[in-house]
Image (cartoon, rainbow, N blue to C red; front, side, top):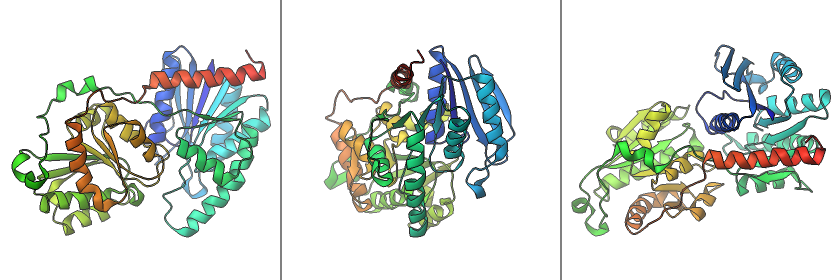
Length: 389
């Protein structure tokens, strides 16, 4: 098959959506399909055209943030690409912009017979104000209904994402919807080269004596208010002061909320216990996952939460917020705990570590190779319905 993937973000940069598009493209190409990935340029990065065997990644013109991605040059580029590449499937990613919806409309206008698959990566939370939340709801209802009529299939990564999109848009039919979770590219064996001393069971009534080394917590992701890093910092302070446990928190990521997080860490007296790192390369990220004791992700607006699954794939204990799609993570994996509120986080960290001393045969998330097989089944199915095969 010839498959065109369109991403509204920069596929070679960090982030959940970018990881999904990158892994999907890589594994589709590995299975012998011809894949082209197109995305706009972000942050002034130069246009580029990179070939990796039967995988090509194209960075187009600037993503105009003020106009939510509108740039006529990118639309013209895609039309030329459609004519030159002649894809069997066009799979577009991202709902929170105007670039992808208008690209879908454009493709269906000029190439009405082409098969279009849409992954919205729909996350209803995380808005800065009630006004922006109301505007986004209106956008979701209006644009969502238009797109659903045009596309041939829609893929959601979690039950939460699927139900959220159906409910807010008000879909009467769900026949075009498919549920395919994201995969992971990590496995426990990757941690063998980063062996650290095992975590001793914490005796809650005398934690300081039984815990003989620093407890390492880890967060990976963008630094935004709704991601909940501030709650992890508060729990860090409680672990150190109330429970007598020496603990550190490594924060890997960047974002506009970082100054507020640094200020909070200083106010709580734990600034020296927080290690700040920018987004790092894959090898360094794996090392940090492997050397942590507990991965903490308290985001309240995730449509999947890929970083939590990556930690689980490396057999790491994970604590997530009991919100959005992260709840599904707790139902599936024994080494994952949901917290109802940030106030109970410190106790839950101790509970999870104690629980894991009696846990065996921990389940691992599916690999990207397994997940891509499901995508190929979907692509073949809609081609068969149309009679293209």
